[in-house]
Length: 79
Image 1 (cartoon, helix red, strand yellow):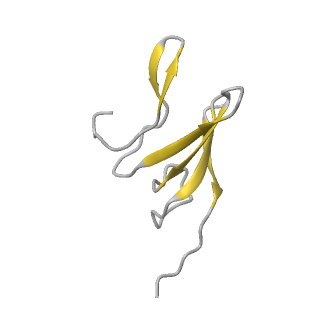
Image 2: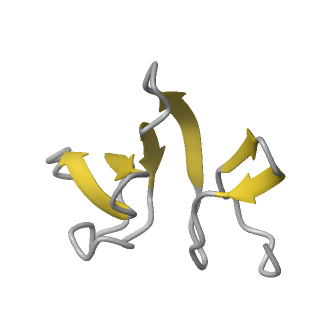
């Protein structure tokens, strides 16, 4: 994590594993499925290309496929 921003890490059988790798944003509050295959988390990143405004959204990583997608999108309007 050379850039020092907030990433998600997992302690696995071979040690510490970095789960997210993003720039200039933050990933937080992970929740891991019972089988460990999926991780939901909140993020203000645009790693999936679906969060260009940088608002905090809910994302899901499927560790079996290595894919990440936005699963909840907030629609806020600032007056």
